[in-house]
Length: 74
Picture 1 (cartoon, one colour):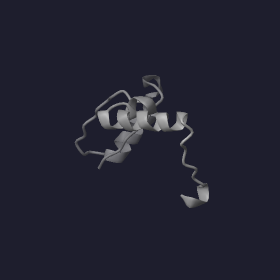
Picture 2 (cartoon, one colour; picture 1 turned 90 degrees about the vertical axis):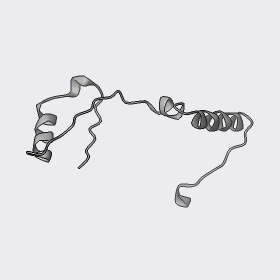
Picture 3 (tube, one colour; picture 1 turned 90 degrees about the horizontal axis):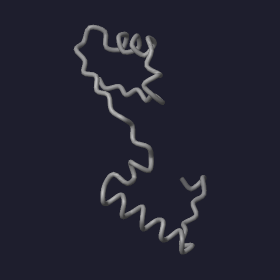
Picture 4 (cartoon, helix red, strand yellow; picture 1 turned 180 degrees about the horizontal axis):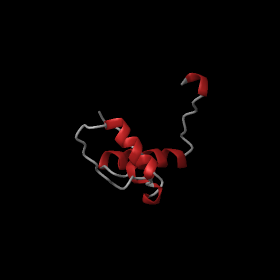
């Protein structure tokens, strides 16, 4: 089983979260990994391909070359 908890900061870690983990996994062995969450910009810039795509999109937007999408089309 795999569960991800997203917190705004480490200050949000409390007994409720620990109890939720205990109740979910009971007596099973677990691994807890803690990592800093990337914000959207950091994520988009995290690979060369993403950076290139983002740069291309920004250049297109500056030139007014935009694609309009309607919610009902999604």
